[in-house]
Amino acid sequence: MGFCRGLLRMSFLGFVWFLGFVLILDSGGVQGWSKEGHIMTCQIAQELLEPEAAHAVKMLLPENVNGDLSALCVWPDQIRHWYKYRWTSSLHFIDTPDEACNFDYDRDCHDPHGVKDMCVAGAIQNFTSQLSHYREGTSDRRYNMTEALLFLSHFMGDIHQPLHVGFTSDEGGNTIQLRWFRHKSNLHHVWDREIILTAATDYYGKDMDLLEQDIEGNFTDGIWHDDVASWKECGNIFTCVNKWAAESITIACKWGYKGVESGMTLNDDYFNSRLPIVMKRIAQGGVRLAMVLNRVFGASDEDMVSAT
Ligand SMILES: [Zn+2]
Image (cartoon, rainbow, N blue to C red):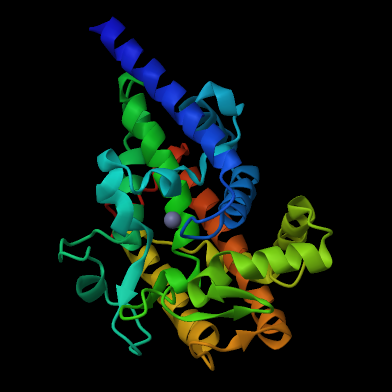
């Protein structure tokens, strides 16, 4: 029995490593923050982990990634269409009623068949709840806990991408075809990736580390420094996912969809006014992922799952 479990775990770790390798080769076509957005979210979070959470994360990650959570933060995008993981594909986003510009968990958090909780807000609750049992468990739990960590880390990024909480009829901007400067794109992809890549090219010599350092500088001692405490406010995970999703749809309405129509060209005006928002959402995703991991793995008995 022990041997079988060991074997299962070995094959899972090899499997995760393989996927990690694949995602390095895969440069696009994913949904959610681009891989760059997810990697930054997870790197920001990992730097903010307290010792206990940092240790737990290292224990859960496959050895091949050398303790680097960000190496597997895109994994849920890579596997979402695989047969085994098809159930996860609705967990990356929330469709809200067109033009409503608000989020109502009971109304909006379901998959296309109406199954409740199958949206990014429900997923964050579910995987936070799973991880909250880590400290009670033994290594036998590792199989599920590793997946839970990767899913949670990814979905904390997705819920902060404003167009991941978008309108139903345009699939969060995916069907709004337009041009980003000179090439074809769509509104969803502009928010997933185009803004980040244009910023990297225009301002950071294509060096994502420099872009990330700028984001971090803004909250360590820059313009968002005084806001970080309020970003981390979270009584229990249910109220928090509701707040984060509501923030995203509010931004989607005010900054994402506003003034945008199919067929138009978005360029400097749109880019310059939206870049600070994208950077702030990546920062918030990272800070809040660290907050959740510090609480579920930390020594304090603050229970963010069952507390109301
Ligand atoms: Zn995603």
